[in-house]
Image (cartoon, rainbow, N blue to C red; front, side):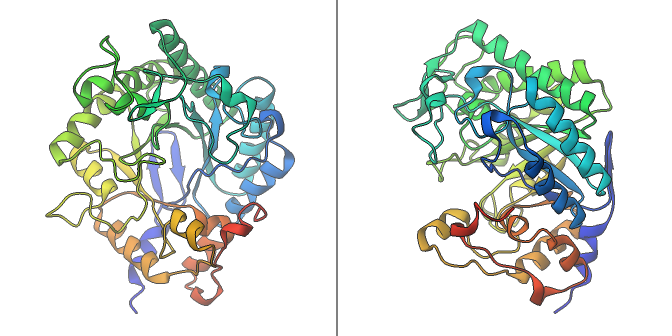
Length: 372
């Protein structure tokens, strides 16, 4: 097979404060390894192993903002207070190992964690209209003051990220959490300035976070925004049914200052709209002109939830690596995020660069909690 396109994965990339040795990104994945929200030395070692393994950019697992009501699980890391000094060690160690890093700032909105649904932190949550799905309650409805406080908490987190030496910041705007609850008409029934009948109107909350963050961190600090069409538990939802709707949704975020869109898709090879082979990241780049990250079962042949159903070993699939590399080489998107494959195999980038296909490791969902 022709592996010429693999070289595209290892071209450098630079955008404002973000300077990467290659196009490979570690996708954010929740690990539940931070007691009381404080990252441990083991967390630092976990990320540093992936940096040594050759990844260019590490996006941390979601870390909660300093708005206490943003948290729903006690073992997921925070990004404020006593957690900041440990995060400083994490990013310092990652830099020494040769990778860049961005924290992913997270507010869950009204969504409980399905792995730890009985965590007491999930008893006090908030969402735009007290909903997390069609007629599905989730958290108390946010007042305008609550919204202003949530905006400010994201801004403070981004300022701290820059101060601690991170190379960029990512806002988690996907998968049915707070930003996404504002985007989706089924969970945002507000009639005030942060609601509305149209998707661009419901983007105002996210745009306000980005706008205020840009003012606080300056023009040179890279802002990444993670977005998705699907939501946890509602996998067939599409906020934007057409390219025109997708552009209308994202234009306010572009105008506010997003530099890179992290486009979460369950299987990267699936076309986003009929009549074009472009996936979500491809369409977002084409419509916005912004850099994009693609993700979704890269290096594997099944999505995560199928693996949970079968509980079988998910074997490496080099053909999907060749496919994503060819698309990258064509310029459809700019960065490639690796999730489960990198979780199972910290040296995945080095093995791919050297075409050591037979050495790539598969993984089982039963082992995910022990693969560190």
